Length: 500
Image 1 (cartoon, rainbow, N blue to C red):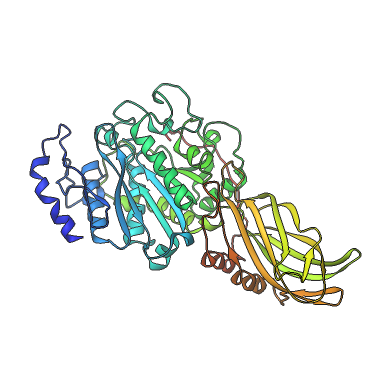
Image 2: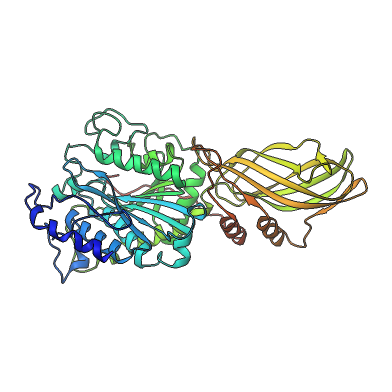
């Protein structure tokens, strides 16, 4: 990595003649292939004495990201996802433990700086980069569990010109393809601008490869945490889930939360609605405050100003595994009924999303030992609730093996991830009836045993058989079975704002 940093130095002197006052040198790469910007002095130097009080601009942010990537090669990759209208790189920090397989990780996509003059919204993304590289998210345990993709400055041209729109005069947060409308400063068409198109395509690629479990985007305007829909006053299909997530933030800090179009105003073509509506990811905009045009403060550091907002984001990141429907067998039993032997399975939805029209299929797996008379049942189960399904079986006796397969959408919005999970257990058949299946004195212990024996395969709309989670993720969820208490849903009138 040190060699890569040295290799870019000869390009500096020949690169300082750009009309923008920045380097025009070509992008360099590290030994691993990650893009690394030229190590040039920033066009707007940050005073060294008050360095952590002053807002970033594109050149010094570029240098800072380069330094972080060079200093942390095992957990950080710096790449460019595209270029702005004026040719500036759109930097992405990919942060995780690259030695741990991605199938066991929660994927979090974060961006900021859609509006060039909304400095603190961009700074929130920068603070989260620091948390993931050298702060509270940088522990080996967290980096083994999470995969972060952070694009801190989507609109570098607007940042350098201190204006909301990009260099073409387009509001990038009205230019995404989901529910785009042809209005003033929305662009000539969906994703007509290179910045919004690059960010949207990058989100699609990350979602196809890993599945985005949470999308956070930073803006300024007023201190609110808002969710879809923005394009219509109608509630989103997962309104209950999104409100529940927002309530966790409200309960921690008192931040106002609510649906964007209800709490603020209608906004079409937004990145948040794209993340939720097209990609099926829980998506939130954090409106930091209304200090979007202020260069900085010499009384508090940026980190101090954003301490509450960062804490809220860390809370949401910590709760990612609950932001979906999550079905699993809680207790198993077997008994005789008037129609014959029955296997009863108590199923719990430990997630915060509703499982609608889910199917559960019970099967004998050891061949010839028995069969399930009506193997598949369809049911729905609300968040943090339980239900019991009964399956009539026919068996010749002895110890038998059974599998229970679930198939359901983890969220209600179109294109949400499809969960296909299978759990295995043993059945002791006595005579014409069945003994207890995996019987235990306590349901919590029982489900942990069942999960540990399970093979869990999740596949989604982007291709069959893609492994999204292994036993490690399932076991983590089992350990948290008694968590996730009910949360308050709150909406109240917001203060004035001119974003997102």
